[in-house]
Image 1 (cartoon, rainbow, N blue to C red):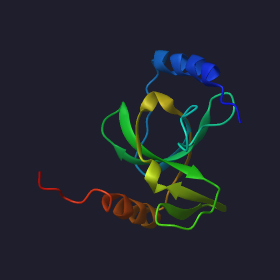
Image 2: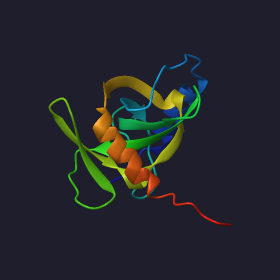
Image 3: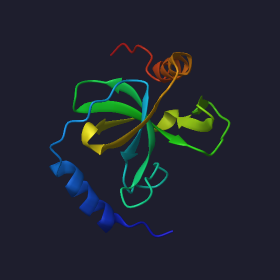
Image 4: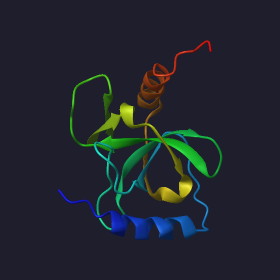
Length: 132
């Protein structure tokens, strides 16, 4: 499948020029412009190159960690199924990303605390304390 990097570059310039501040919090699920990416990285879809993401960590009003969501129900340690309302999705732990809040498009839901705690615990397992 051919990827439209040129269209994404135009959209990325528009996102970069945005001045409007987004109000967001940890545990929230948003539509996010992830773009056209390389290899097996999760791409966005439609004209905004977006997909749902879970906000894992808010560092400040401009920078956050997110985890992309998918509907593909893969069963391994890098995928955690979640349910929000009556919708089933899967959080992709292996694709944790730092993004600008300018990529956030539209608020969708807030993940229940229990599900969010499980995800955060699993993410923390990827970062054991290291002695350097």
